Length: 363
Image 1: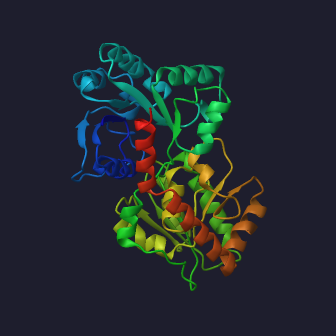
Image 2: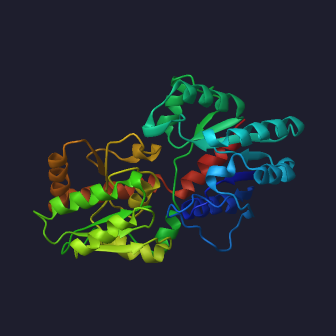
Image 3: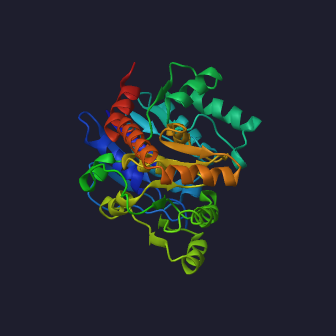
């Protein structure tokens, strides 16, 4: 089975789990990748992969309307059984172009791997979002959703024919984590919170700093490790001057460097937009905490409230108390970590590869 996977933003998470797909027997994978998001803290890995990579010097925001991308797609279109095009509004011109190419290459099928519905600013779902989502799903030969729940939701809301709808839990490369880390409970002699992600506004790094200040009133030795970089780094730089218990590690994509930090962590806390960072925390057997909000990715469904993490509401004092109780009650923290580890195993890259294969091979 020959697959072409279009990746306007080809970050380290994506590269690693797609490499596992490429290593699977019977899979021949090619990636058509862009340059990602401009100045947003993304990091691409450069190493020897099992897939073939076609690179175009086009950013994510321009990818869907690029003549360069369209020409590259045209050049190779007929060589594949399946071609993935991300179902996003900005990719509509590219998708229409691919639909036209499919007319001349009847053996090629189009698919997507995505959220259940398109959204506008602040997570709002407009009439246009619904119409465009239905158009995409009617036109694709197959749609794979990030979660079982979102797949069922799309079918129940008549966005897609059930015969086209499949799911594969989004993943990270847990085998890379396992090279440098074997599950262990957090140290008993210190309390550390980890933030791992790009330093962008939607992550709400300033809210994290405020929570740390409040938590330190009752846990004075609390430490914060920040892994990531991006346009909001000035907030971190200022916080470093105010609090000597904050440690900024910059962007890290090598698990050999991430593992020693996560090993010491009690939990991962990202107040804002949460996605694959949830998988990352669970791969290390660490609870995940975030706040309710409209911008979360479907991976939020992996959090089992009060079991492996929290999705906190608007009451700051109540939230601080809930996090504090988790941190200071050793038995509860250990159980959360054990539950996070089990969820991480369920979300493994090995399971993801099989779910993707099943989705594309099923007739």
